[in-house]
Length: 320
Image (cartoon, rainbow, N blue to C red):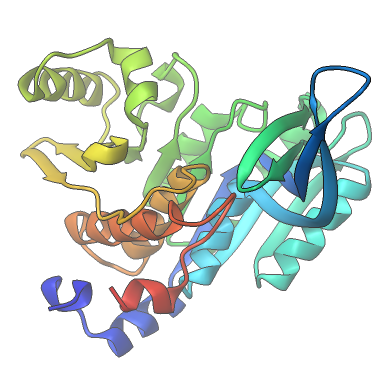
């Protein structure tokens, strides 16, 4: 029995429901650049490896990767974010358009688009170079107006916080979405979760949750901390992704745990994007939260077996 059969879902019906689902993604975007090569010697200038680059790849990362996962699963994604007025922004725009994503990227001439450059040799990352700036408040305020304008045309809102400054108005965004009757899912960042109060669902990973709630010594202690945070922030639910331990959903009626479905773990970067993107799309398609969680867990198991910022495609998910 495959995954969809276990969840009592028909592939054709599910595909149709996903195709009609509309998700608004807001947050920090970045351009992920990969330089692939080989290392066969040490530099005579310093004790560092010399990488001879053979090929280069570009992928949309951060909140843009959330939108990519939604589109690759057959849903409709709209992306709002702030970028620089530079070559990297143009590259991001082209990548997003190629994936069928409606992208509204506000250009701020005073900053550089966030770029993460990774040098990879023999399937190992040698170094990562980050280029980033915080967007101006004027551009962010303009983006908030765009958010209000398109909110009504979407079923679910995802706020993807990478701590780059693109979600300065996150509290107002939550307030507007809830007033419009739209569920708000947030991938949080940092140790101040008060700004996320009133959201429908937060999806911290294990280390992010520990940073906010402190460590725990048992499942009971974890549940206590999760319920305390959920209640304090007036959240409908809290989903803690726990790497090799799977993921646990905490709601008022108790906890629901699912073990990981990953067969092999190759690269966990971007797995959180896949989780929240799949969750949001499934909820937008009208699926119950536990079912959405199962699909998200399965999709994450697929992407961690891929190198770099990756997505789960609908045919891969349906084939499980």
